[in-house]
Image (cartoon, rainbow, N blue to C red; front, side, top):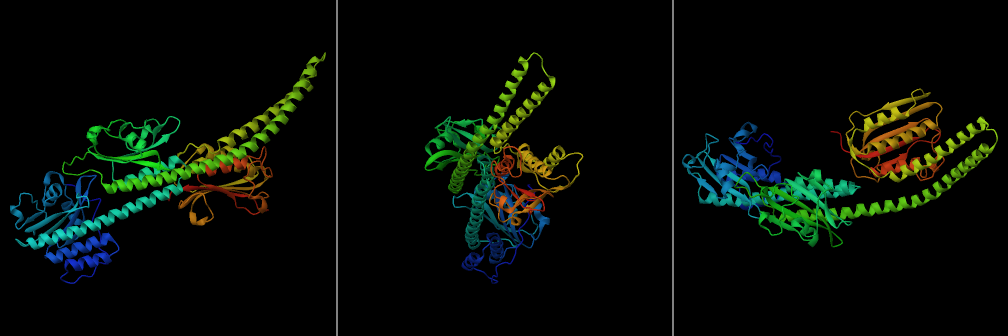
Length: 590
């Protein structure tokens, strides 16, 4: 017997007002007025007990993944609280008990004397008669079992059986409403994932996990076209293939997955091993363990760019139908359509970013070429001077030392320009991993802030800050740039570095993400600050009013933060110090 400790019973809130003797038409009218299907299930159950003069009424819903019945809704004299949980959660397999038998066979049971029924398993000492009927969905699959119990012998007849079948139909409609609401919520969550995802990797991972929660499958994989090899490569997975992301794939027409990717048409197979297209290659489970296979194409501009597939494992329960339905197909198709739209948006954004970066690249190339050219001209002058000194009859050591210093200065300057160049190019190329933002900030401060300084450091780290996905090395570069920038403008004073978790509502002007919370990094100094008319230009490439070198420092900071899906801006008041704020999308507090 499976314990129901994780499920419990629904509490009835604001029950429908019924007459003492409700009828089926009255019940249907009242159910139609109840906006919450869960509440309506309780109301129908209570009315059913009244209409049949039953002592107890139970609705046990089938858990397909666990292969068992879960008692979700109860009413009656012997079912009043959680003290009976262990008794009312019944396994389907083994046909133990009348409800288990109905769930396994799909046959209704009516018995006037439970002691003479071979399937009865006593739960309550008061039970004398029992009736149990299956609740089926639109595809004819069993979704639940509706059970009535009486303390009278021969309490039920054809009238009660017919009435129970009608009520089971109402339960079927209400369960379908609940399932539909869950699927609608899944599509909303997928839409939110599309809004929040700035990279293909983030979009794929979010969609895969949302779909898995709703479709109740054991594994899912998403494949996208690699134009260079004309192969559909695994880009995301929930299951045993997760460690092979980016390493395996299908050619056009190869296996069922390759067929869907090539044809742009879906496949729904229950017992897929008998299909001639079945290849059993790159699957999440051994072929013989797969009970159902569903794969839909991802279409962009009517061309297939990939596919999403989901599989269910063969259940240990021989009576359980673990196949996919047309409803599952329609939902996964809708998700695939949203994925295609999201991928197109992400790729268009990447094109825009690349275009903007290319424009900046052109400016960078021109300016760096000019600056390096000036240094090379100076180096050539030093080399010519060195040649002139070496031709003399005697060499003045002081002259050589002066040339050595000049050569070193110019070479270091060229190296600084090249490093700025490299940092600018690689700013948006991230390698994200779950990281502790506080640890990263602390390490950066320890490395950058002078050990002995007239500047007072005020460091405040929010200990409850959750882990977030970030490139710690790149973000450390951004934070160190801002700290060094502040220090360079102060001979003495105060530097405040602080982390915190803030709601999005605190920064309604932000555009980068629709997340509910931001991880905030503030770097505030007591230097001269930044004039209002300069705040919109300081993050542009080659701005040199407050930074050294080529003027790429703050541009690099912005590129790194933008790539993380965040925003950076200056919020200080001119004459009262600079206050740089970095906002990064973050989950809620645990």
